[in-house]
Image (cartoon, rainbow, N blue to C red):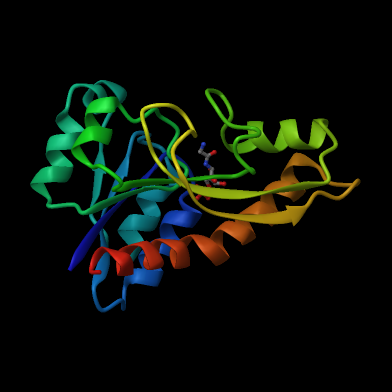
Length: 190
Ligand code: GAR
């Protein structure tokens, strides 16, 4: 069984899609939800879906505590689904090509420190972009810079607000993220 940990900081709608997608999967399962925000909605979602959660803080991410927890739980793949902290180089090294992130824009545009969640959609709408989308990529020790696995696009309409664009991007994420992660997991066996 491929053991997946989902790391999230917010509402957790993508985490939920991943948990549900892999609940019946023959070779992979989301076995842990890691979270750095005690008030995050993702914790309730994990509880409701019967997936154990692990709450940690920024210091524990940096000092190796989180790495030891993931290794202790024999995690094969860590999936960042709305996780807002930088992954330390030591953790990247411990999980080579085994940490994947989703970003709500077409990287390399609208990425980097401070570009997360609604900040991204605000910047895209303010720039009057005609198109936005999602990027699923391997994680390295710099924000949003790892090798791309997948991108999908959607239009940005003249009347869009950051909120309406966020809703369109979320739909795109929910449709593609579990499938891309499944393809990645399937390739592990080959
Ligand atoms: C998603 O749109 C994800 O792409 C974004 O946070 C949202 C989380 O939504 N991630 C980032 O901005 C990372 N830089 P969710 O909590 O409903 O899954």
